Amino acid sequence: MARQRLQAVLVHDRLSLSPALLEDLKEDILDVIARRVDIDRAASAFQLSTDGGRTALVASVPIRGLRRGRR
Image (cartoon, rainbow, N blue to C red; front, top):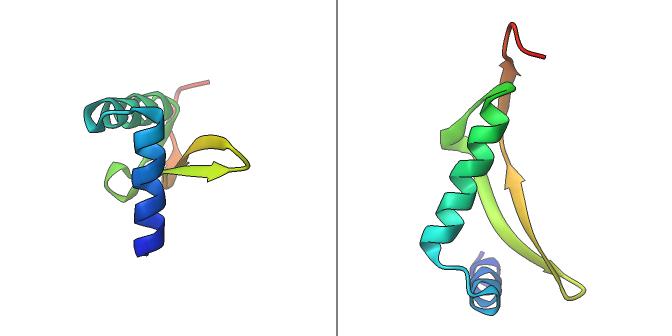
């Protein structure tokens, strides 16, 4: 757990992402997903991951179901 937190901090620093910007990104992503499906925002989790010199924002967003009347 501590190792994951340290990796996230290091990635954060390398990308120069402020906590406010990361929070805005999370909210924007959740808003877009919520347009199409019913999600559990409180149980959603985001983390920065690095693999082979590439950084990814990894999202886990529980989906409760489809929204009715939408395509």
